[in-house]
Length: 236
Image (cartoon, rainbow, N blue to C red; front, side, top):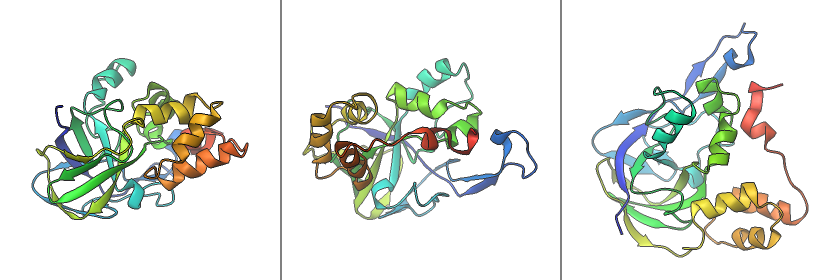
């Protein structure tokens, strides 16, 4: 099996954008850490992410179970065609790791990798929010990302250490081969009536708490709307 390869490593500081006097909601003030820049050389990876990285919304982003966001490089050819724009490319999703030889069908919850001195573990698929839509001024962009299945995923950090671009991710353990990122997305976003699958996924020990919480609410008959997450302040 070809190993995933870290093509680029990206980090970014929080930016404050927009105009306080704007009438268009897409132009109003907002904060984001999704504007990332490529870094060379070894970077310290701690338990909540890279030393040079920041997140704006600490309630919904960052933290130990969203320490590192990875996105397949291959997806950008799809987005360039879908959005009819060649201006979208690596870093546009706010990823920390741009990966080759890995996608939502080949990566599973609990996959544990050696990455330089660090050890990282897949915790959850990404659930896109309204900020990519604001960045590219496409109001339904988060839904497009979600519905395409090209979501990317988050790692937690099991062992801190220095890491850098140009390294392969060496698979140490794969405890849940049945729970690919694609399979998780199917349960969460498309097969919402399949409570058996929801229960099985919620029982996956290494799935992030936020996903377990959402699935367990579904099992109790409480289905939450995605409107706030995918449209946020972009839409009335």
